[in-house]
Image 1 (cartoon, helix red, strand yellow):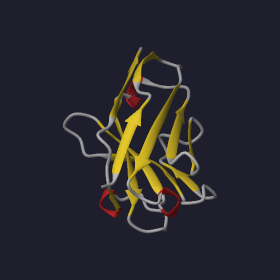
Image 2: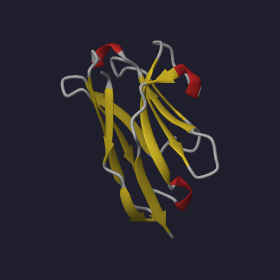
Image 3: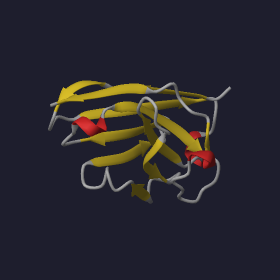
Length: 124
């Protein structure tokens, strides 16, 4: 049974930083590309970042470029999202997910095995 558990969320002020973690189990983690998404109430889940199975390829939503960094440690079955210079508009529940294929994709439907999410709140 595949399980993804996000952690590291919390409340910070504008300009602060958080590091999210997503621990995976029940799968051969190193075979999977991973993504981070976020969602606010009443809105669809939004793509944030992608990382290939080996960590060589990364891709970011425009809103995350230059501020967020996705990385992974296949030995620890964990993917990370370092978030710096946080803004109130970054407030959301953040989810990690496994990509169905190996190609970079921003489409939610191309991901499965979602975690339960971790709340990030940025106050002004």
